[in-house]
Image 1 (cartoon, protein in one colour):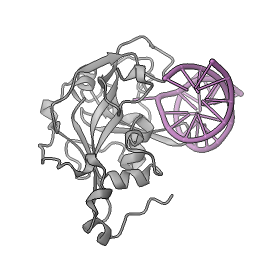
Image 2 (cartoon, chains in turn yellow, orange, purple; image 1 turned 90 degrees about the vertical axis):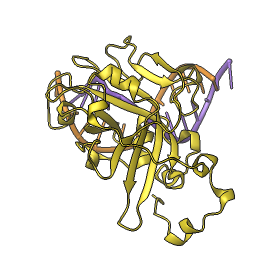
Image 3 (cartoon, helix red, strand yellow; image 1 turned 180 degrees about the vertical axis):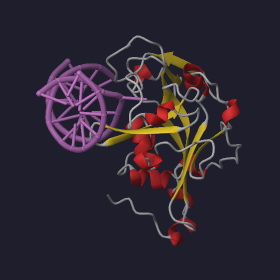
Image 4 (cartoon, chains in turn blue, cyan, green; image 1 turned 180 degrees about the horizontal axis):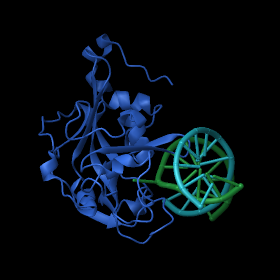
Length: 229
DNA sequence: TATGCGATATTCT
DNA sequence: GAATATCGCATAG
């Protein structure tokens, strides 16, 4: 992978013309989300997270790189859901889904991708919200390297791409997004558009439940055009 | 634009 | 041995 962090000199002297439009717009300093305000219900949390911001800071001290994006697509895997990883009970792999609201659950699929969930119910109940797509905001150059040169609208369009763009893997499993110093959630950077609902993608059980949520019309939502509108 | 298929590793049957 | 909360590439329309 050619995904090396660029030397400080390049970041200090960035040419405005080379910076993508989304990165050149200032991102306001926003309030970190607290556990108390998260809806303690998987489906409600999945809808509520649309428009909120996910932030990952990485790299050694002094060379921290901040990667962030607007959450534009989620799926709810509710308690008792046969398509959820928690369905057969707690195991070493899925333990984070059973932790308190706001924990990260990261798993590895298809031999090459990671996916990020947010534990979505009270301690002891296995449920989560899968974060499926981001509209990149900060650190777009670094995300592009992590994604092997993908175009802006494909950087985090899909759960596997999202984790790759943010540099997330099993090391991030079980982190508490409410308190972790590197990975956290903050408020929406702008008004959220209409939130639409559909069936979920890529599952073979309970396929008809309307538990996928997305910002209607966003180019950063996964799937075909029909799944975005 | 839509559909099909292979890659790849961990988990579960 | 089968399935998998996916992706990127190939091909056809």
